Length: 151
Image 1 (cartoon, one colour):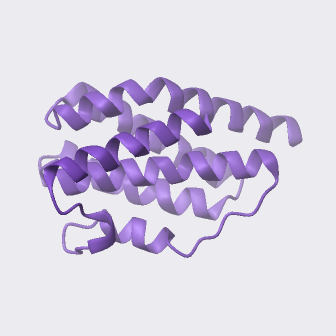
Image 2 (cartoon, rainbow, N blue to C red; image 1 turned 90 degrees about the vertical axis):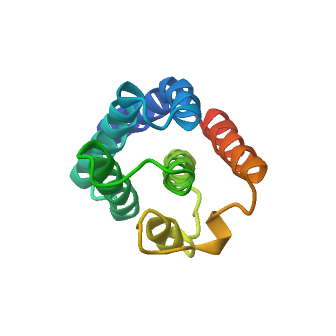
Image 3 (cartoon, rainbow, N blue to C red; image 1 turned 120 degrees about the horizontal axis):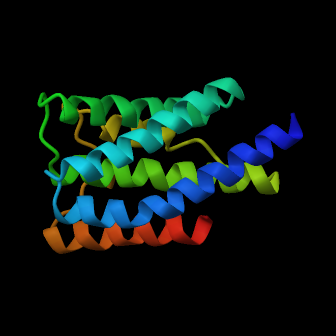
């Protein structure tokens, strides 16, 4: 099983690294369907694999992001700045969790629920919603930079 989990870690890190360009492109053009599909596939794959390995935190986060992205894909929800930032935050957390899994360190879960709630169109989570467009761009770039550093 150790070999399989190591493969999962390596695959997830490789996919996240490859995805970093798509995330930046999606942030700039949230209506870009190809980028949306690429990000959706990533969280879908992480969700399935984390279910197989019984990694509930990864599964909950990726499931929530997958659900929000599915709504966008179905035209039920716009890909607004709040959603883009929330998805970026979840992907950043996925990277942190995979890193913690690899290193054996513990990573607090106190804000997982806040990250998941930020994906909901009905929930406004002030800590995750930037006050100005410049702040939104900065937060998204920090998230991408964190992904790159953690992979």
